Image (tube, rainbow, N blue to C red; front, side, top):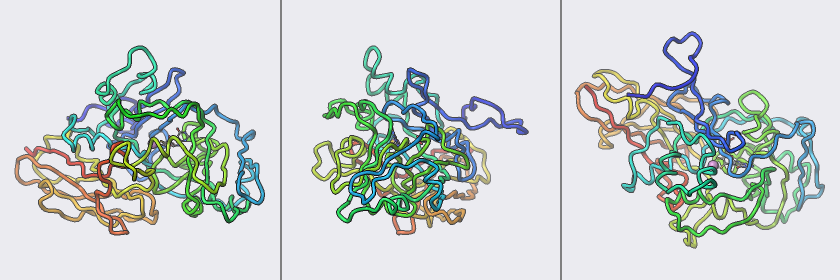
Length: 415
Ligand SMILES: Nc1nc2c(c(=O)[nH]1)N[C@H]1C(S)=C(S)[C@@H](COP(=O)(O)O)O[C@H]1N2
Ligand SMILES: [Mo]
């Protein structure tokens, strides 16, 4: 049985409660991490108050939008200092897209390797105070098992509508010099990276951690992706001004690439002719076989993925009859064109119905009507294909367990 969700009732629905975040707060009471309860939501756009949150360093202090300025520096003809009102005079752009943290569903990699128990898509309340930050900073260090148990990996993905201007429009005004190859985006937030997420994602505590000291959150985006018209500087989300936790007054939106590229609280954008060392690009958020893999590379575009949001294991047993299996599918390289469902553990597959829409970066909802005639045990699977012909899964196991896009079976008993 599914556990009863906590929280308020939805007005007019005697049997439904509002989907809410599973937040974890730092010592100052700020929400620094939260997961989206995907199994409780409908539609394509995740309500802002149920949208996942990841904060790697100490959150930046809020800045009044009227006092906000950020600068464009480096290899440009005209260095700029821009206010929000300057940006609002440029042609605006709205992009609907999935944001997925590179570590979403990482637990499934472990499970595929036979380590740990099967991950659940039902969110459980997690460490209330401090998340991993508090667990590692206070008193005795927790064990890896305690951390993994306290902070499951699912639900670090949401769908949003982002409004702002194309970064390319802004760079045009600054005039990018021909030798520039890289756009270094720096956030206002500072801190010393906590190695615990690195230990969590690798499942090891013997990983060499090269302490970068106190840094600003930063990313070095290659020029071609930075110039894509859908890469935007956003000041609004889901029809309202950005909330502080989501990067107000201004953040990056980098559709198709994992969440760590979506720099929040933008302070400075530097044009460079080299790629600077960024902790969250070269140490953390890398794909490779091992920490000393000479070919390890930064996490960039997401693979091709579907998840089943109904039923989940906790819905079992289900009665004989018709059941609408449903879920979400997305890809880091464009629209989903096909979702197939298997109810016999992958022996046979049938096409699901996919909801069509025009937003290539946004996930698609899909459903499959299953007539469960015979009592027994079933394993339900789903796999997605994108417009580039990529079939789930794309991303092989990697030592930091990033960009999981494997098939996640649901176990159901029909009675
Ligand atoms: N400045 C800054 N930007 C950041 C981060 C951060 O810690 N600082 N976290 C990144 C990561 S890892 C993710 S997954 C997304 C999460 O965005 P959200 O909190 O709005 O969902 O923001 C990214 N941008
Ligand atoms: Mo992330």
